[in-house]
Length: 163
Image (cartoon, rainbow, N blue to C red; front, side):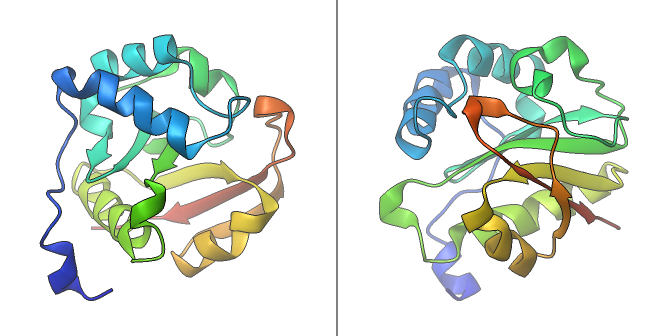
């Protein structure tokens, strides 16, 4: 998808009044065992709205840690606003907008924005079938993650970001 087609989307931080919509999108984009709970997502939006990038949405938690752990999904107190890294917790693109380059554009803009804030790396976990997609976005597969979120086996991935 060319950049011009991205003009129909507004890329910005999430607004508090969009919490319910974000919860609904999360439920559409992930199976029940993988979706963030409404409570955890609400707390995350309240505490770290600046780490959400919406068109659909991409969200994370700032931290100095360099290993992904499941507690990032449920314990917002692990957030460190001055953290040098971001643990990406969800790339949510509605099914009708998939395969159009929106996910790639969200990741690209997110990397640029976080680099401007002085962040160094983004980390995420993904299922086997998403590894190639994230590699195309520039992420490196770090192998089996410690995560067992939703009873699944996950890959740990990272990307170094620079200004």
